[in-house]
Image (tube, rainbow, N blue to C red; front, side, top):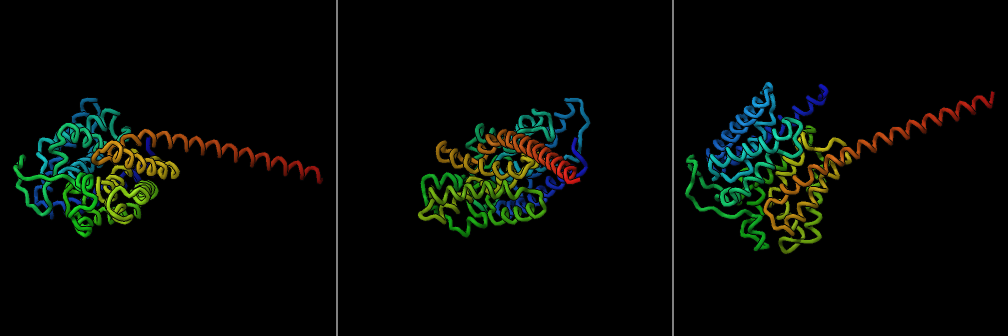
Length: 333
């Protein structure tokens, strides 16, 4: 059972992430209209309903103060194209909550981030809907199914065009095709600063992961004609910054020791590059997160084990030192 201080830390982390995500919803509404807000509300409701049903089926009392549920719903909406049908986003949340959370026993017992699990499964099942996007500043109707022209994401474009037509300024402000809430680079960086300053996101994990990805992009230069554009395109594409902040720093899957958090971020960064350029997978960081989650648990257990052994050795040395001093004192007497 969590201590009172741990419960406060957990609640603060989840609520803070939920609050900063409102800025991304606002930007999504700016680019795509009220449909972005409707999608977010439908996503939250479907996540809540699924979670309540699963808990009731286990015969347990539901905790309505579990803010991880609306956070999961919001993040699912932000990862989707603004053109996604209401049915698919509902099904995505059902997959996320049932297979990503309740399958492992519910809140705090899940190994993977539920939203990541639900989105990855949705992209496999409905890739032609989930991985194609409307153009920014195209106001969309509130109908469930839309008949509009959709385009590939920046990640796909970079796969066959090292220098896309979209300008760097447009990339900074999120004016390019991609998930409706994961393209706003400047806003995400501001959210990262706020969450890290409030200790609701791990500085070590976030910068360990993004730093590793940036370093590999700098040396290997997969995109662009120079080192700067290579790093810039790598961090801006594939939901890297969004996923490192909201998924890698998820309170429930994040390792607890400092050394484990740093290694966890580095592992996610390395796996992201390997999967993207060997497996040719879009949003490769999501698959990296799934692979890294069990590794994070092992890292944490190893770190705690090392800590215990270190304390035992320190205690033993301190005890021996006291014994030697006592013997020396007795000898002088």
